[in-house]
Amino acid sequence: MKKVALIALAVSLAACKSQQPKTVETADVMDYANSITSEELKEHLYIFASDEFEGRDTGEPGQKMAAEYLKKEYKALGIPSPLGGDDYFQEVPGSYFTRGTVKDTENVVAFIEGSTLPDEILVISSHYDHVGIDDQGRIYNGADDDGSGTVAILEIAEAFKKAKEDGVGPKRSILFLNVTGEEKGLVGSKYYSENPIFPLAQTVANLNIDMIGRIGEGMEDAGDYVYLIGSDKLSTDLHELSEMVNNKYLNMNLDYTFNDENDPNRFYYRSDHYNFAKHDIPIIFYFNGVHEDYHKHTDTPDKIEYDLLEKRAKLVFLTAWEVANRAERPFVDKPTLTEEQ
Ligand SMILES: [Zn+2]
Picture 1 (cartoon, rainbow, N blue to C red):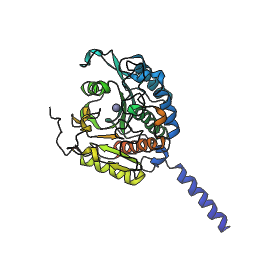
Picture 2: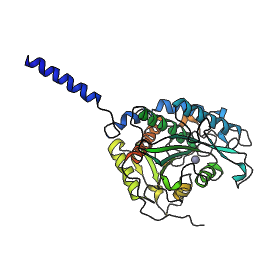
Picture 3: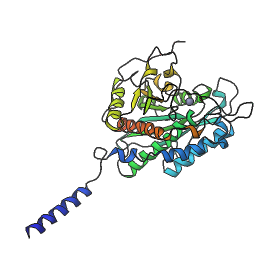
Picture 4: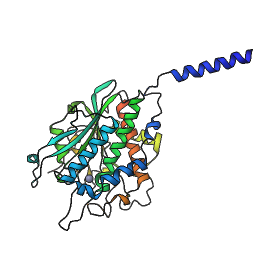
């Protein structure tokens, strides 16, 4: 009798526990991080960096195909555009470009609205354009630059969407920003920063990914590494958050070599995040460093380290989760760094 009562109690307690609604605080973030897989990244990248996309030169047919691919994927995931309806493209007019003649082009945008702080926006960005075809007819597939960052964003978007479907969507809103014209001088991100869809003052941070699929020069023995650039330049808070997330979940080797102000490469000023940083928005730039196929027709999807790409994409997702969900937005405590002319 007593035993039966105890069993009944145990059963009812178990039922009670399973009925408690999941919250962002009680959810296991790794359930969502683990939806980012090397297999899916590879599947996307073999299409996105295929010859069919003709090197995704800004304004050219290959770039338009790439834009349509991203739109199709966001729609399939059920992630809407912040522009409303079926329009996932922020038009960037050819006349906006100052280097050479460029046709009209577009940034691709998708949006997950925050549950409790919807007016605060985290931007996760990568450029999806590349340099096209050379005069010998060779296609520059740009698998690493920046197909890797672009397919990572698709997987990160999917992970946040799954969380939202489970009732644990991000508290702040997330804008997935696939920018065009990077190879023409960071033009798509500059256009966004001058024509923002959401006010820059409400944009809490930018996580920018440009090349995370390869092992860079001299890093053969660095294990699961990624270069982080800019994390502490405006916000000590964002830097500490990023370190905490890595220590808690992944323990990757975060390398700050290129974060040094005296580093001659000056990467902080050389990808799309700079168009946010110059407006005092804290950024982190994720990068694998250059390698022998950088800006060559040999930057192809067969050379990508898919397991490493998966880990790096997870790091960006987990960092984004923390930025989107914690009580306060990253606090800016340092002055703007302006590029010397
Ligand atoms: Zn790039």
